[in-house]
Amino acid sequence: MMAEAHPHGPVIIILGAPGAGKGTQAKHIAQVLDIPTISTGAIFRQNMADETELGRRAREYMDAGEFVPDTVTNPMITVRLGAPDTRRGYLLDGYPRTLDQAHYLRDFLAKSNSEVDLVIEIVTDEDEVVERLLNRAQQEGRSDDTEPIIRHRMRVYHDQTEPMATYYADQDKLVQVDGMGTVDDVWQRIVEVLVEYHLYTPDNS
Ligand code: AMP
Image (cartoon, rainbow, N blue to C red):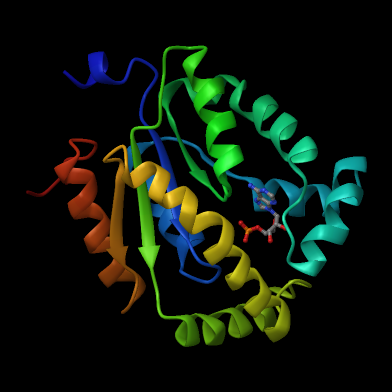
């Protein structure tokens, strides 16, 4: 029974290089599973917009395409994961990003006898992604979406986040999904994964 396997609801991580379409797919997943999406990037951007102390500390790193230090990020995610809406499970978008963060998350979850259930990585072609990001920068006015910074963020993804994906692959928790094609193509591939992992049953099947 699902309730026994996931006493607190599923803990799912979505991964993908910058511009893989992870935010859009995350919204869909969270909607159909009725769980919150927790996006560290979104929390940082909200804090920047609200001009909080946290936002002020995060800005210089974000603008340079660098990771915000764990001393800022880990306490922030700990607070967020303590909120009542996380009891039915949640989808993490943008966290963990490094092996250290993955270990931090493992230790945090272990305290409630929980663990990561599934990691979905959206795999994309770098050049297509750069184009997508430059379009998004125009639409959303993100200050960290210029071409050199995008390329830098991709290198950081390869250097830091891909080794973390291996960590989850070694535990048989990683599923790679082809991120090429339309948003709907990718979504259909993700649905197949969610069905396979008994996390979701489509209505009209
Ligand atoms: P995102 O919206 O996930 O692309 O994140 C945008 C930026 O926020 C990243 O380039 C980092 O500067 C920062 N950020 C988001 N999540 C993390 C994290 N888990 N650790 C460190 N920095 C992060």
